Amino acid sequence: MMMNLFSSFDPSSNLSLSLNWMSTLIPLILIPSYFWIVPSRITIMWHLISHTLYNEFKNLIPNNIKSMLIFISILSIIMFNNFMGLFPFIFTSTSHMVMSVTLALPMWLSFMIFGWLKNTTHMFAHLVPQGTPPILMPFMVCIESISNLIRPLTLAIRLSANMIAGHLLMTLLGNTGSSMSLIPLMFLLIAQILLLTLESAVALIQSYVFAVLITLYSSEVN
Image 1: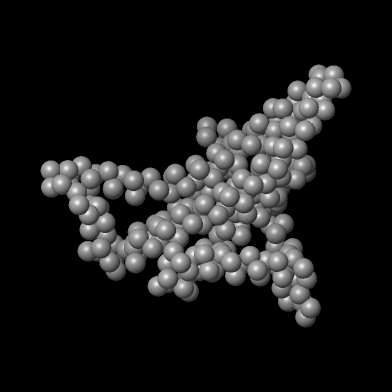
Image 2: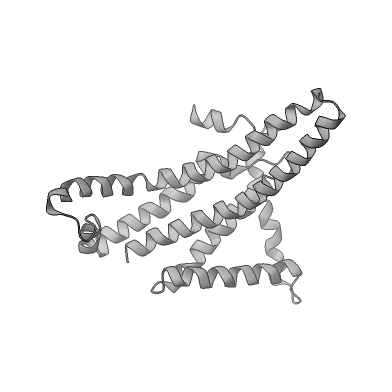
């Protein structure tokens, strides 16, 4: 039922094939430009962005520099797919729980396995915050355990809900345009442009929030 709810705004595909997920592979077209002798403007811009993200994540986990590539890659995947969904008739894969859970669950599970196998004492100590009264320690263990278990679900729901909310609002407003007169239609177009600008900001912010939270989760197990 959940998957059908998030699939209600998919563009239709022809040839009796589900080609909507092919839009996820569109950013791969940009990869060959990295091998040009003279880099393109897009390549130079993305190198600057990657360097900025590297410095940002390095402050969050200074002792694990080699894993920066994973977090920057996750941010890139989510951001490209979010921006692809802003174009007409392109399927927004990050608005589906299938895509967001696939990104969140393996990362969280790998962090938990590594933490409990390598830093067991630290993981047990993390269940009880410092300064907790002894009488509240059993309750804090239950609360921290539940909060750790629902982390991949909250990551997935946050990304999917924020991406589908703006598209849903733009779709509902766009369907009312055919029954409006000229002056209300002009205001509707201005509102749609403002919503599209807001969705562009949301696409960037949600990818950054997802990557930062994954980075913070990894820093807790080290």
